[in-house]
Length: 477
Image (cartoon, rainbow, N blue to C red; front, top):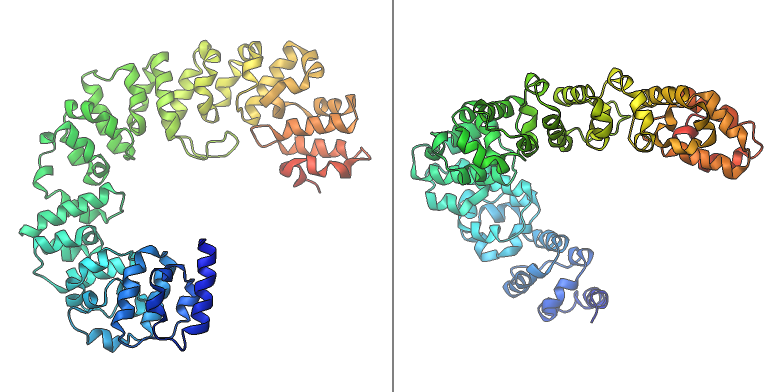
């Protein structure tokens, strides 16, 4: 039977016979997994029917979370707060998986003793983050004598407990287990209070002497290093850092932390040209004065290393923050005449390149127009290059306007209106509008006004609305 057919069949059976047939849920068995959440919630309550509970528990793992939660709401009809708090210590084990899906307003009445007794049952089910935090705080906050074995059972739930409650276990056998759990949570990307990390991890015997860690262990602990602070990083050796560099190059260190690591690597001149690219996120730690003294090949390597870590808002026309090191590298690279041959490498840094740097190279850029016209210049940069192009070859723009590529945003109003006037057919006008829509930067306001002023002169202007693109269309008065 198809899943859809099963679902329809089970729905009909439940709505038709459930009210009169107490054995229907037992007889459906595995077909309960085809019941919809709405049909489950509508089921009449069953008082203390152990066989029904066992049938549901056996089939919960075949159900979606929505179905499980629906059965939790159904079971909640017979679970009063007093019935939970007054229940046996083994209530969770006696009830089985279903109790994990009680709504939280009922789940929160479980006692610490019940939670500890039934922890294994709860952990093999899907628990919401709210329930996980409740379990951790109810257990660790209520007991002061949990054993190492108890914390092993708790596993990563320990990370959700109050830091004060965890620190109460300092100097006990359980504390090492807690430390390992905290490390595992951080390695999985869980955000924890910095004070908790500092108090718990820096007391870990393994981390007290940073220089004693092997390179492989340092790689494993890499995600923890930003939380361990600058004092820990200063205790690492050059040989450790070089060996662990592949594992460190993807970690989001702060600029200060990254500079500590990079400075150590530079101390013995062990950082080769190729390794600038291997620095990854650590590139933010390379000091400006260091970048200024690099040769062109090292600067290009640094540019490649920095590119993936620039702001995600990296389109050249967005007023996004340019890191100081990005502006420094860009400015230095544009100080070399050969930069016009490196446009593919410096392309990601164009938005960080000062206009003055581009102005010095406009003649060379025009000489390599076929390549220059494919790069994502901002409006001011494009205007400077187009101005040089007009001086060098005034006829080129008129003869092959569309060959300007990404420089189209830099043309003046007169040139643009001449293009519209040279061929007033709808096809030609639409080609120019498509060309403008493909520009990498936001068009200057005066240029958009210029376009609209000219288009209003055409009788077929209303037919062009869909060709304008959002940017120009939104500028219509």
